[in-house]
Image (cartoon, rainbow, N blue to C red; front, side, top):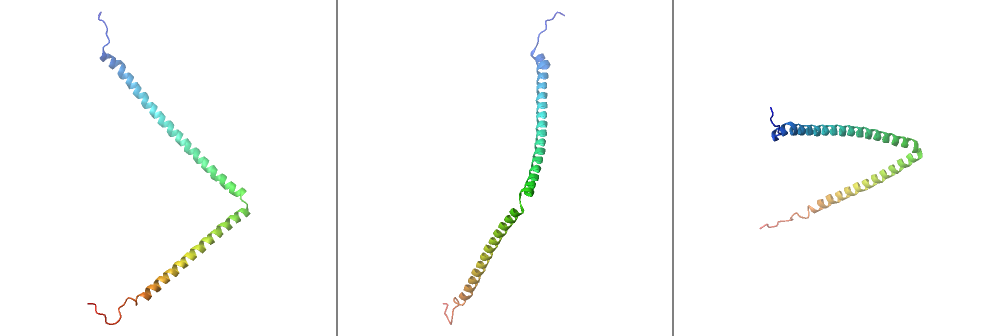
Length: 126
């Protein structure tokens, strides 16, 4: 029983290296899972906070419109919008009438020219 104990490379790999690499692999996987979970949690919190901010912004816009916009301002905006729409309507009406006049001129010209190209009398085609 007095044999000298030596460490062989096979024993070193099986006893030390394989468990060490297994532990490193497990630590990498756990770290990745934990990072993914924390990123997902952070994303959800950001989305929730963003929704709250957007809702508060909409409420504050409504409050500003209710409290700071006077009746006179609203009537002024309504008058300007109405005037602009009336100008647009006048332009469209003018363009529509001009197009109708042009179409009538084209149709009257084509009606006059039909008799112009018809041969009169006995014309020999040969």
